[in-house]
Image 1 (cartoon, rainbow, N blue to C red):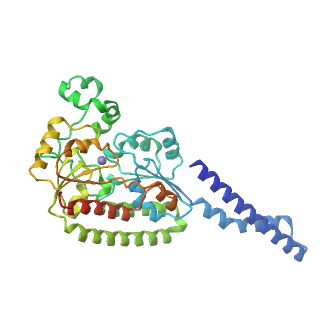
Image 2: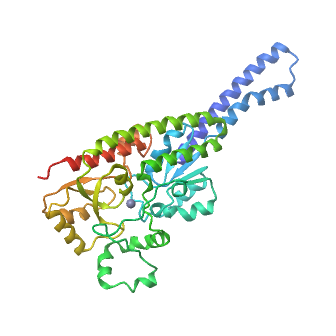
Image 3: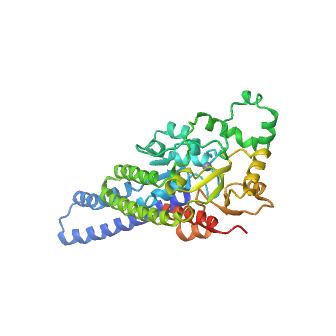
Length: 377
Ligand SMILES: [Zn+2]
């Protein structure tokens, strides 16, 4: 970040100096020709000539987003002078994340902050509120589609954890169940505590993402009033592209509509409802809690009966959680990535650590259809 900034400043300074030198050379020639040119006139002419350059550089802005998919939704609205950074690094899970001092500094120097505003990135809430920066909170955009967290059947009942004092009241069984990730839960408590029962994976809805594009486009037009037309144009082109992508995916996923599957954690409700997919449950619902032995046994029984076509793991969580369920059984195992991890090669080639949202949705669609069209061996 600092490197980028200092190289940017260097670049700007260099161009500025070169331009001033050009202007001086020009003025020298001009005054030589006119002989009577005074120093004062030269100075005001210089000011006039450098003004357009100065005003352009003012409107290059810093945007910070909480999680990679949000970057993928808004990146096509920005121009090359803007700087977009993502707090959550590729491969990390947002559930239970805590802001680092470097994240705080990044947020402090941002002109615009974009976040989900749901339990998924509620680790931003306090800071965003305190900073009083311009921000777009996806959950607060008018007309946004929200669903409650699913429960019942193989959608594990969502249980909340409480303050340390109340924790002693939990029964022994529950404690054993959670022991492994106890440390993580402490961060998670406060987050889930204040959350409503809204399913926070709002960016998995194509409709919500279109609304985010529009909301961010409006903020950018206010922040960069001299580029309104460009931003409007970029926004419209991007919305059209997303609409096309949505239509393609709709066709593709029609073929696997009736195939039941299990996911590792319930991040896909919005996507499923959009495309009519048949998710029948999750191995875990609260992302920080390992499923109980009883639950694993229940799921295995379901798979043995042939009631599930595919079980999806996720790159952000340990594979053993899915293996505990599928070991020794005949079942397809696929992978779904709700964060859109990109490889190091991708990052080097594209100079960004996230994939654009159309690619993100196409990848998800492929992951679903690959596993749901395979025959169980
Ligand atoms: Zn999640």
